Length: 398
Image (tube, rainbow, N blue to C red):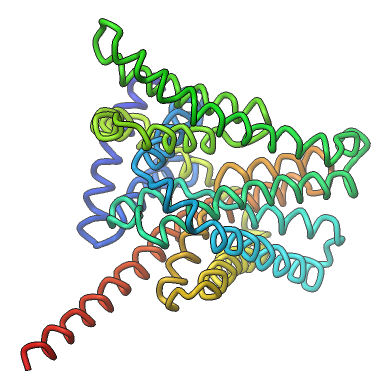
């Protein structure tokens, strides 16, 4: 199918999907994700995941996380680093341990294969979560800051564990990649990114603002966005993390409001809808009938492990149970890091292609379910707050 026709179909169908989801009081992102499932290989075979959709989706998720950083609060993020680190750690331990017990106990997997399957389930991606938080006006809350901080820490923990696991269990080629060789570039990335964010970003935007051309500041911001994303990928981190840091750096400048108003239409008009559809396109039901029990139980473990781990982490730092559940639900969504771990596991010969496909299905299904879970807990929290305020008003009148 011609790429222009694909783009037309994606834009039309995502708007209809978002509208229908809104009518049924579901997060709009659910409608867009389901467009990918229904229009893709799983059901109607209208759209296929090709080069065009891949690159548009990559740009979409980068811009989405750049916007999240742009609208973020750096001071709040630093303020909640302790609960964020605790949530990330427990959010890795719970699903990994549960998956290992399930795979070894019920399906007779070897310990090393079960460990890699657990690591795939432990990786969080908050790209979808960010969309729900924005939609519910919850991005700059305590829970929102903890979720975003935990997502960054989660990436680092997964990289460290992946390095240890491949060194211990991988094939000769993967074992040659030492733990230090995998971890040092990641640490170096944060040092360089923080230095650039503090000293380069404000100066660069001031220079860009003085250039005599149309949309010069917006172009300057996008250069920083994609530049930071490129730096992250080159140093072994996720491109969305680089984009998020670039957005946070710009949020500390005087250009924040101006750029938020300019960048959002670019992302949400074209690129971000393609990203949401691309997730649904990854699903295929071919050959799944033999692994339905395996997929169902792993999906249960993937959701419950993150939910419980994240919620306990939040509760340890004084959140109410509902606030803690918001944090837990915000960590359920999976994404690019899970795919990275899965690819490493296949390359190392630790999981076969059938189980790789099953893990992709579990990853996508968890991502489809997560937004509704998050919205339910946020709505419940808002109802509780409204009830308390109503009681206080009644007491004051009496």
